[in-house]
Structure formats: C-alpha cells, structure tokens
Length: 319
Ligand SMILES: C[S@@+](CC[C@H](N)C(=O)[O-])C[C@H]1O[C@@H](n2cnc3c(N)ncnc32)[C@H](O)[C@@H]1O
Image 1 (tube, rainbow, N blue to C red):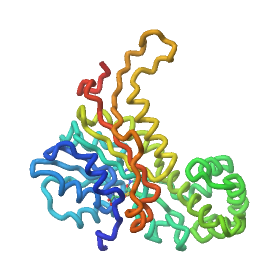
Image 2 (tube, rainbow, N blue to C red):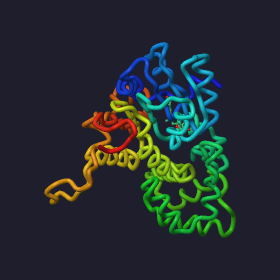
Image 3 (cartoon, rainbow, N blue to C red):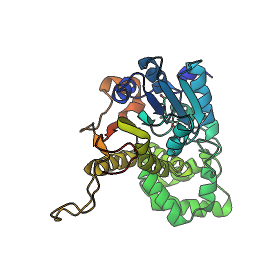
Image 4 (cartoon, rainbow, N blue to C red):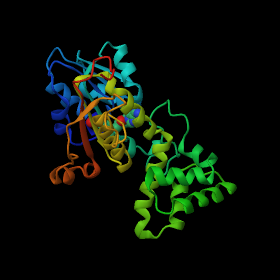
C-alpha cells in the first residue's frame, strides 16, 4: 500500500499551528488515518517531545507506521479516541499539551470497495472502521425496526425521505436480506428522482456508517473526558465534516467556556462551576478555495479550537 495516498490531510498546517504551543511537549493525535497530520506535527516538534497516535482502524495504524518510519518520539496504538485519556495515562503522557481530532473516515477507507462504505462499488454492507465495532450495516438493515431505521437515516444523514426509505427496507427484507451496497442502491434508485440520487445515496451511506461506528457516541465521550487529560493551557483541536458533529463541538465548547449554569435571574452564582475551557476560534475555521480546489473533501471541514482554562486546578476540580 502506498501510504502517502492513504488520505490527503485537510487544513493540515492550520491544525498544527493551532495545536502546538510547546515544541518539546506531549501531544495526542486521536485520528491518525494515513498519518498526514501526524507527520506534520512531528516535523514541528523538538527531540524531547512525545506523541501518541491512535486510530480504531488497524490498517490506518499500519499505514501511518509505514509512512513515518522509525521515530523514537512516537507511539502508535490501535484504539478508540473515546478512551484516549486511558491510553495516554498508560503511556505516562498526562497531562497533554494538545489533542487533535480529525473526525470521520479517511479517503482510503471510503475508496476501499471491500469495506462497503461507498455506494459507487458493489461490496458487502460492512462499514466497520475497526474490529471493536460489532454490528455491520447489513445487520442493522436486517434487524432494526422501521422507526429505528428512520431515526438513523434522519439523524445521521438528514436523509430526504428517511421514512419512505425505511419502509422500503422493511418491505424488501421480507423477501431477501439487503447485504450488498448494490442492493441498497437499487432500492433507493426506485424511490428517488435522478437529480437527487447522488445526494440521497451519500447521505444514506453516511448515516449507516455513523450508526455502525457509534460516531456520535464516540464524539460525546471524547469531548466530555478529554479536557481532564489536558494541562491548563493545553489545546483541543477538532475538525468536523458533518454539521451535526460540528454543532455538538461548538455547543460543548460554549457550555464549558461559560462555567456557571445558574439561571440568568439568579442574583449570585449558586452552582460554583467555573469555565473549564477557553474558546480560541471565535469563528469557525474553514479551508481556503485554493485547498478545496485540490482536495474537494476540504469543502465541508470545520475546525474549532479550545484550550483548558488556566483557572482550573490540574486535578480537574472546579475552583
Ligand atoms: C479523517 S481520517 C483522519 C486523517 C488523518 N488526520 C490524516 O492526516 O491522514 C479519520 C480517521 O479517524 C479514525 N477514527 C474514526 N473514529 C474513531 C474513533 N472513535 N477512535 C479512533 N479512531 C477513529 C478513522 O478510522 C480514520 O482513520
């Protein structure tokens, strides 16, 4: 495998500019992919720095290892970013100076027909990013109720006609299970006007992928746990490609930067909560037209950065 073709990193230099505050510090890349961001991060850091790279996909870890080669500062590990504090603690890397999350799938995962992420090729409807994601997309289509399927299609993909497609899946599986991407594609073709077909198919496949890999659950876990893994002033850099994920990151940063949760009409604060984060990107950061023209995937990228508030104690207790 040519690992340099694994994935073209999005907002690569920008993300590293935001991430690095201490060139001899400790950093964690929670979504190694093909190692594009990781390689740039290592170039930016000094000889005493240490870096951990995590990815749930063992193929990604192998590709990144091949790309980067021997580097004593780097530990690569297969694992979930929802458990990144645990992984970093195991390597004695806490507190961290920065955490990078470049969410979603890599181009390599999408383009590998054997993994079933794409409607463009015929393949088993698998869509698992790593060995720990138990249920395949075919299994979801076989066992979810109509209401569950509609919710999956609507929430994960904002799919037009989520209800109609869910009903059609239930009807179709009475005669034969939907096991291959081409079978799902045909079902959607029968329900969708040609001008909307590509959009509906990509939204539907994205929705299934998000559900199979519990991507929203993983995001929720990493947001709520990772702040405690940062030193005061340490940074969390998140690149999202899906509006639902970006909205959640924005909301989380906003809530954690506010601190006090008392109703606005309380004369004095009764909850005692202080801000845990300081938001550094007042406006979301997007890719330039120049980058989008060479890497169309960059079009939907939204980068946000927050740092752990320095008023907090290192143990994570609110003062
Ligand atoms: C957009 S790609 C990252 C690309 C990478 N930044 C690069 O420069 O090549 C997203 C990666 O995150 C991984 N991933 C997605 N969810 C994950 C999770 N919960 N835990 C760990 N890795 C995850 C995917 O397997 C994929 O390799």
